[in-house]
Image (cartoon, rainbow over all chains, first blue to last red):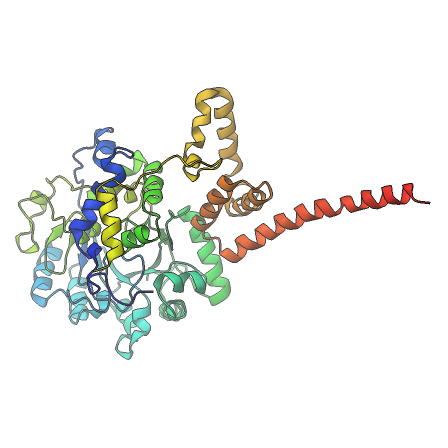
Length: 351
Length: 131
């Protein structure tokens, strides 16, 4: 398993333009598979337009303690892109006035940003209804300075969403690295210990499931049932919801698909599973994604592909919700990942 | 920079990688075309796929249990398409490799048992013909 990001290894796929060339070329350019644009045009949804803004998702940096094989951020310990306090101030101005009901902090491991705690304290005062931090769990056990994170999250009524690829050690460690499973289990038990994820608790702990390979996630409800049963029986762990998320063919997951000669089959699987009903509910229609350096994107995936919003307002310092909501959403073939089967978003299925 | 990736990248960009019809009886790409059998006999094809879909829904057995049964049967009838399909289906359902292999053994045990139980017929015949 790689211990460095594609960027640190200076791989061709670290470049977003290389990724976009692949997504626009090959089977799509040859006409074997239709472009995403044509599929949405066929149901009168092109150009794709945003609906009401509900989620402000802020990526506070690409640094992470893990180097997961499927990571769409290409995150890792070697990534130095970290949101500055100045950009955080600009984000706070927006958080205080946005109509969005959900604030969603992601990374990398957001907790590794040196200003993370200050930012959470300030943001939690803004009265946002649902304040999410996407925590990879192992960070809580990575270093003594993070041991109190469960208490910290509780104090600020943070909704914790954590990745857990499987309820068995083998499958988890293969995707995320040796030892990740045991650390994640310990972190989940600690979150349970302060009240997170328990039945009837207001402290929300949800898990994210990504397939550990070149296949789509199964039925979200069935997976949730299996995860709940196994984690309770084996480790006495409880949580509220499981979100099944499809891996999008970008960054390290695209690299994996190509290196394992699964790319074409995976794209066929995504296109075959295209669900028109998911199109009007894809997350780019209710989300704005902010990068570590303050640029605005339709989603975290477009952020990683360097596709800034098609709007006069492109940076958090110039933020204007009305102007932004009038934009056309930028799409490419990776978007098939969000419209396959029951649909996929940072909040799981969409239909 | 990784030479392999540049190579693959160029193949995709220049449209050199593409599927050709393999000169074998089984082609993995044919699995995707399964639905086309309906085109030559709409009524029967449609009835089959409706039935097939219904069988694998959650019922008295879970979809997960049915997927493992399908995987075992796929091996017994030695259908490469079905093995591909139900290995993938199992992965999608979070089924582990240990569970999959045990299912294959369950199928194999029945299949070898079915052979061996005929040994009784052989014994009967042997005894009848022998003095």
